[in-house]
Picture 1 (cartoon, rainbow, N blue to C red):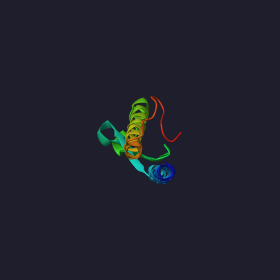
Picture 2: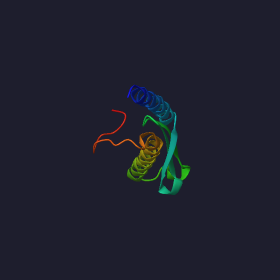
Picture 3: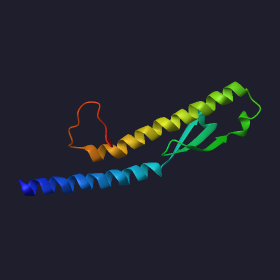
Picture 4: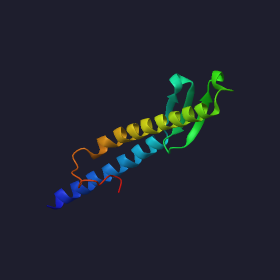
Length: 107
């Protein structure tokens, strides 16, 4: 039994290290989102901070409401892509662990 517990502790420590590494990789990510067929592009980092906005010259001077909608859509696109990339990165770490429904790692 002692060997089993020690082995389980080593596995838990390895999983924690892997999770910290994955969280850092997610924080370092840069995800691009776009709308209007690429007329508005944004870049978001893994901490959900908007780091860049690019607006095609053809939109400058156009309808302000449309431009605001396109920016919001591009940010939402980047946010959804970031959520998917984060989930994919973390999913490999939790394989084989049966967590109660609704519980997520890290706690």
